[in-house]
Image 1 (cartoon, helix red, strand yellow):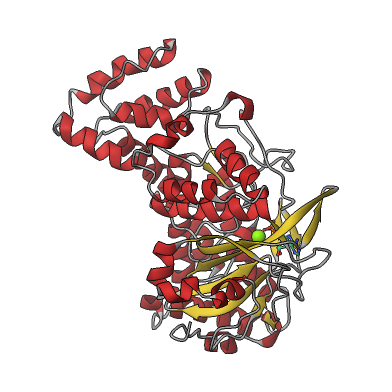
Image 2 (cartoon, rainbow, N blue to C red):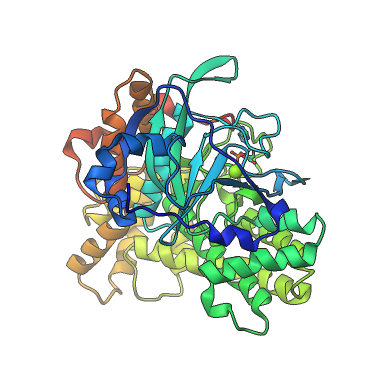
Length: 471
Ligand code: AMP
Ligand code: MG
């Protein structure tokens, strides 16, 4: 690991009360579950690094790479609509930057920000995060990435159960959250600290804004645009985050902090995947509105350094722009490239048929991509199909082109909760083969995986499975 050198100089640009130098607390008897070799190579690790004992110690936080000075970030946040002034990396520790990737261990022990928590992550949630981030990346959706994952003999207590502590090493182009600005806003030297966070974000993620006169307003506008793109992509693949608190919203428009997430199976726009979300605040259909609400919180806390009027009026355009982008993606999923005034109504009718007839969301689009519509055998969808076929007659592209393009955008495989559960059950018995096979499927969702053909279909026993926040 001699050639891997991390950079932590960036953190010195922030005021010392925005972060805390912290050393990881390693797990007992760490066992390697999986390395994302494709990503490891991109980061610059070679085969010798990946096979060395130092690698597992590095993921366990007991081998600190050259240049690394581990630290945890302070942040605040609105959780389920309520302001929580003191949050932070309670179980995550940043190690430093490698190329443009900020490395972070999740589950590596107590930090200044752990509050009542134990600083740990359990195996099941670690597997879920590891696989989901790779699945999202392969679907072309901005996300954190995962490098490797370990389990251990360290006992962790959740809901009266004893589980195994695990760690995932994950990366992001920034770990700045909306909540990072909320923390600065609520504490001393707010203007100076808001500027220092914004300047660092601009330097790393929005360098083209660096010398602009209105750079903080423009930064906000670009965060709005990136969030619109992110949510349109989430909705298009049926991804539900489950905990869209402002501390889980990335300032560079990434999907971050995978918890009780789910990919839509039987279509239900009101589906709530988080067992603890009793009011359905983070239901599938609410996600765009919540994102906009979260952006209004961001506008509020940026107001000491940027014009509220400009930020709020920009955020007012969110839903209009979001709908335009979302419908454009759905049209692409349907293989519709020309424009017809009836397209919106065609799409709305499709969703109402999917909802009424409880159709599996991703199989529907995947099957439609084949151009063979014999799989459609329900009343409302049959009616919709007539309209769709008629609409296809107006398309100028060939059927071959359409089929090929649709297959590139409509995945055959999504990570269904029951697949993840199968992999978790096996991993808890010490067998990590399914986790690694699912990693391969997650990274190649448009391909055939004959051994796992059964995973293209929903499992009725796990219908509407929900997860809780306690991970
Ligand atoms: P999450 O719902 O995982 O995004 O976490 C919300 C906040 O609680 C974050 O500040 C986390 O760092 C913190 N947190 C969650 N679980 C733990 C834990 N087991 N120990 C310490 N802090 C935690
Ligand atoms: Mg979080």
